[in-house]
Image 1: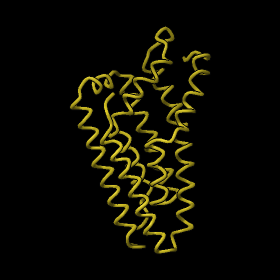
Image 2: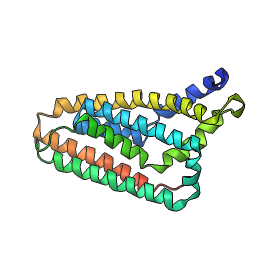
Image 3: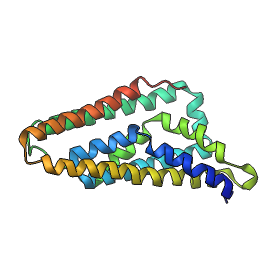
Image 4: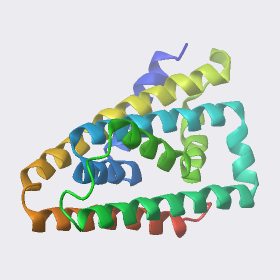
Length: 206
């Protein structure tokens, strides 16, 4: 059980975190531009599940292992860079020829959102730094508190990222009939994914 005063302090902090533009929000924006509103919502759900996985790992103490092993951090990080670059190339290639590829199904968008979030080791390090400030060992076992607080962040992130993705998806629908706009959307989406890859590549552990 989380102390009500702790929860009152946590909620505005979590909301501010969710509203701050970041890699997850930009990824969902890119998915909306690439594949439409349904894919954007699915991608946001995948990101939320990834956040909960990071929270569970942190609560179990495995996050500290990643923080202590630079090579583990780098392996996860570079896998994420490669995956984002692959998504960037796919977005540009498919956008180069209107109608060359159908919109990604929701299952694929969910998988991509989950994979991109899990391959960002900075997320688990952030969880290790943020959530323990609101965990009170005297209130009971630590893991349930981690999961409860993480669920608040994941739900808020899902709603906000999905909203951003839906906006992008509706904008895509209005431009889909224009071949030039389709090509431009491919390049814009690919650029977003490539920028996220660069951001992850230059990320420092601390």
